[in-house]
Image 1 (tube, rainbow, N blue to C red):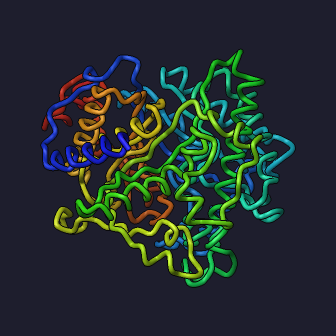
Image 2: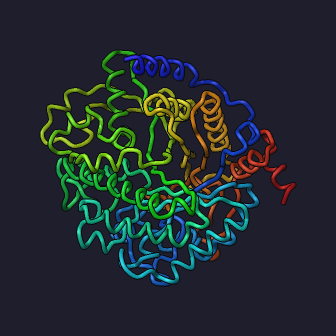
Image 3: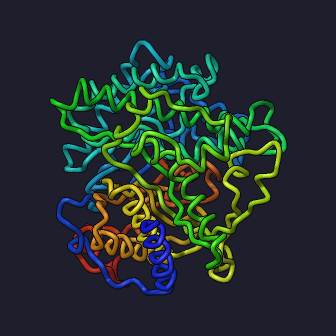
Length: 502
């Protein structure tokens, strides 16, 4: 009860701070061992989809079926596979301390299991060594949505517990080959978002859903499959963590974590109903994964509302999952407002959204036309929630950034204001005791975005996808971030200061 009261009071405090203007900040305001970087993922940035032995992932199949908004694909994208040295130089010039990227399972092990692809192995060895030699920490995600298509075809991927063995064997190769230079490993990216997009709504591959839910899927079961996939992801994460700690930890001294997408959720009104609904929504969105990893089981409200549709952990599985994450990566972009929706519990059939029994909404009065909500205090809010609810585990902010049209101006002042505001909020959370150890912008380059293709971008660097050499151009946000990382206070002359160094 006391935790509930503290959390409710904190919501009210954060909401009162929504309009505060960010103060000038610099790298020196943060602890010296705090790490700043930027990120990407394999399918979104590498390109070279058919080069050097790589086989299709489920994203290749999905995009080539024309299911992305602009009907595009990641066949070429930024071509970082061939341009990684150029990109690492840009990272050095910008002052990045770390780079978060993922490994393409189907590039490294084309059949999903068995022989390692020498060319794929060579690429990741070269990229990792280039980063390390330039003083940039590699933070590696094992799977950023792009499961090998061969495993989807064989046993429906995450819907089968067979995935646990194959994912663990894949991770074993990565630890063995790259663990001498990589200390920070993330098993899965945003599984709480992916399972809903892939198995409830069908807008992520393999595009499974069932009527009346989702987007014209030809197969699937929205009421059950998200819970099954989640269960197998948690077991897979735990298996990989157990492998690392048994076989590699003593020599490599690394850390194994998992990544969660995290809205900051706020009651739409101060009513008891909306307050309780917000807590319930957090249990569904965040607790669905963090509760098993911290406490060994799903939140009680999730089990109650999902009933027999959610798998149960055996005592052995519970022990293996609990405590298996050394850190949590959080992807935070926006704040959502929660309204109670108890009537949804009367619906049959019912999916995850119905089980949650809430309505999510933006506050329309706070959103400029054409933009998503800009509420930097949500960063501090979500970190405070995790601190109070889960005993302040180590956290890395793995993704944070603003989306704009891809062809928007290089003078992206709105993104500068976004980053400055959210990093200021992050600093306040650190000062208030949250165990946050790093921050990564999304994304370093404009990349193939999984929902919109090349129509929208988050990058610090603009990529001209129409030019033969895919030329990169720094945006104002790149100049600002560079000055911030180099210990200068943020200011309007960010570009001039950056150019004076280059």
